[in-house]
Image (cartoon, rainbow over all chains, first blue to last red; front, side):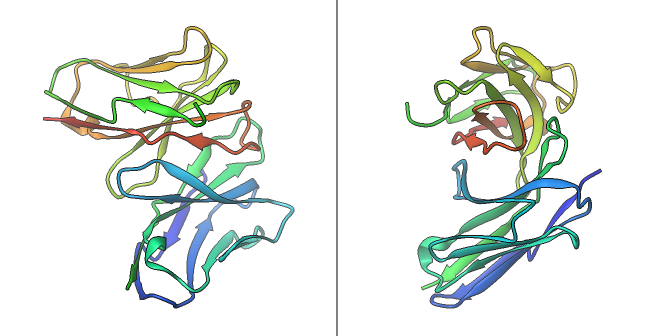
Length: 113
Length: 115
């Protein structure tokens, strides 16, 4: 059974710092991995989708890497801003087309002005 | 509309009551998913529709939960005899078709509180 773990559960950093959020998964037989952002009381916004054949994806100040064989992904946020404060969720999709997407519990990020 | 919409945004009910939660997916998306997110947890899969049929309902916690999508577009999640443990945010997502290969687009969720 696939399990997704995100560390740390919560993180507070001063504005302007670069930071890394971690995601690990127990079954390396994944088709893709996705990072989402969730603001309080809101739904999920997709940030980056990495296919299993890819090593990383970049969007603006965000960079997500994937090491499928070791079951790990990182989300790197450069030059953090107060507007980056949110919960970041990692989710993996299995290789079987009928597999469900499995989410981690998320990392609550707070950027201090 | 441009995105997935869910109504109501908030629902407060008393233990034992019946509730219905509605999801309007992105137009043309054949796949529709319901998730439940408890406080401090990630979303957990409840049920998936491909068109009008519930292709996978293995995530429904018990027979008090039921969902329909009669015309292959709007879906309603129905909860009978609500319990305090049902309190959570219920998220709906849609996708062009059924596959983890495709990105899912999420609605804002319905926050259900059972008193």
